[in-house]
Image: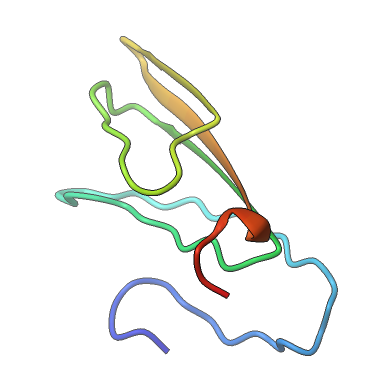
Amino acid sequence: MANSGLSCNIDLLDKSAITFKLNIELNGSQWLSFKPLGKQTDVKIESSWVNPSFNGAFLPVNRNIDENGFTAQWKVLNLNRNYP
């Protein structure tokens, strides 16, 4: 388990898809990151933050930023990663 952040144990021998939804409120954080460890990793973020920035190996496939906040979506396949 990680020393910080959110984590859980999963059965790696179970080949079924794992879908989850998480609503969190962040205050005072400098960044939020995800590790695309699944065969396919899909992430969607909606926020009232009006000046986000995006960096890293995978940029959003869709994003919209306006005066009300932003939405962004990532889709990462295991074939696109540089680690097993």
